[in-house]
Image (cartoon, rainbow, N blue to C red; front, side, top):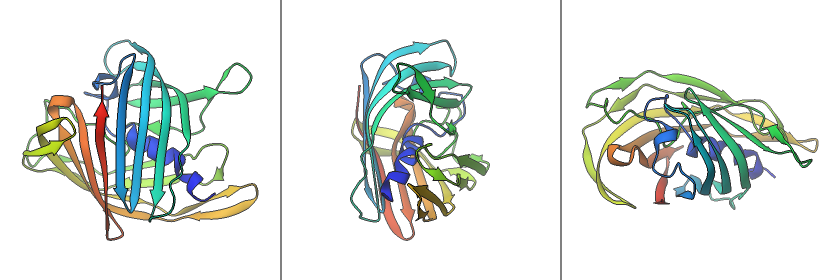
Length: 238
């Protein structure tokens, strides 16, 4: 039960960070039949296998798509939770919202907001990065899914700093990528399932996003949580 509390967080982390520049609507898999697979390891192991259909684009960072697949999250070596995902995602001005089947032939909102400025894999402007550039600290709040009665997750990122471009190995071969480093803090909170209250621990991380301009996304996200390393790696996309 405890792990199921986390199922909304990996989706947030896997579907967004940046403002509306070269954002989620422009990544290579945002088309009918597009796919992206991500795998994770370490203290906070995040992953997903997602397929995209019914993609509609209206210019800029304005688009919608049906997202189906499965996410996974394992915390501190515990068995992974693997929730199924079947959402209608709408992106407007750098912010994504989600709906799902309400079981009666209609759609209902997924409670809470999934902000693309949150910690994630699609964020930076490929034409604007330079060594030494900084991005300001940010504060965010996420509501957990309505099936859990929970306080919001409160997330803070410190100032982000762009390091010198480096050539790294990715699942798509070698690419020149910018390392963007910052601190991420998720405050402790609690959730209630069927009247049982469970704590959600705080997580403090030192994060490096490896943004690769050729594919317009972060291909690796390295982090250290409570002294233990984690990695989220894009392993496949089309």
